Length: 350
Image (cartoon, rainbow, N blue to C red; front, top):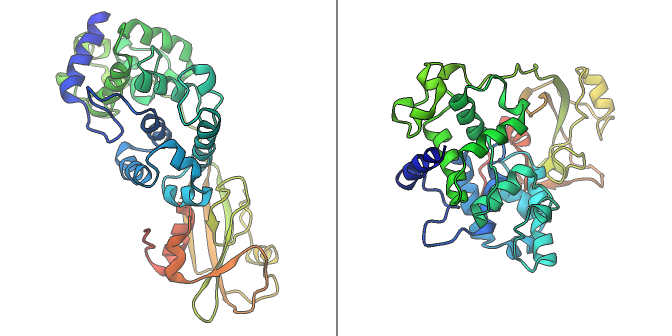
């Protein structure tokens, strides 16, 4: 199947996407850029990531400068990208590389897998793209291409061992980074989930589903379970000046980000009286529900009812008053942006 890799590499040389983290000959790939982009691209589209990548590399042009940033600065720059454990791991990894590796990225699977937030896929991508090492880089685009080319009779994620064997048959003997990126680009621009452009695909003569006009049947998808729902109340507290009471979130999910105080998130819907009793201010008179926001996490849907009080004399240790104009200076997750936007209109970041 060496002609498969030859054809796709030839196509890639003139059709590759221009992305800010990609190096073009004769410039060698920057491992910091490769790692940063791969972490950002997890569960996130390329179109969304580009602006964040450019902002990060302007603020922190190398791994040492990122290591010297505070986690609050990193979270603020990350807000809106979601999956905030990635930002925490990104910062931890930068500090480890700066301290233990003198700012030089390790290039072996053994050491890469020891770094926070780097699993088998990210390790393979870094080794192939940044260091041109032979490694099998399998993302959703690659899974889709292989499923269609070979008409795989199983959902790709169900048998990764078999998927690696299949990819091995297509891989070249060199240009490993270019091959990995060519497969990503083919999946993103030609072999798309819906309405693939099979007639202009550079490797359509190898594709069994194209020959049999069954592209729409592959990859075979596993039935998705319905997301469970969770519910809570969020407590909007203003003082006479219009300042808002906010605090840093300590729960594991979204930990370290700022929030408008809320109840825990439960499977059973809260009654208003129960929510108030579990609030930091159970003795105050709250409004009726003035709104609701919905946010979809990976594993559940969350519905938060908003209730409100106006209070100046709050004496709590786990938060502070924030002027409305200064809210943009703090790192809020998208969920809390929805709450703020409901109350104040769109909150624009710096």
